Length: 101
Figure 1 (cartoon, rainbow, N blue to C red):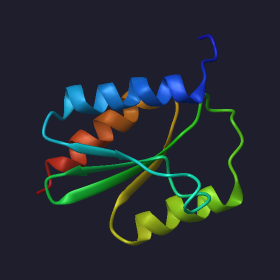
Figure 2 (figure 1 turned 60 degrees about the horizontal axis):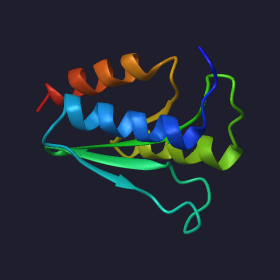
Figure 3 (figure 1 turned 180 degrees about the vertical axis):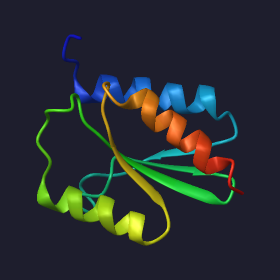
Figure 4 (figure 1 turned 120 degrees about the vertical axis):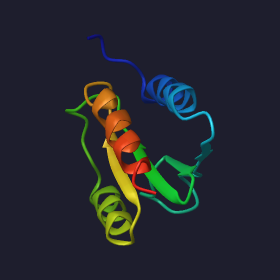
């Protein structure tokens, strides 16, 4: 798979989220407000999800990104690093999580 820009993958992922979960609300977070906060937040029913988009599985992670993803999982959300190689797996995880409520 050819490497793509993170912004292109992010747009593709947002489209996939909206197609698979038409009732969701997806918000693009401001990276200049809090450095390391995940790129996207999605609200679906009573649940929330955050996503740090990477252009590939091998892309480096900043320590503060790891901290926020882990902290948001501890807070009861579902927080992920997402990239083209795991996108379908993440979409399936969301589908399973959203069946809980």
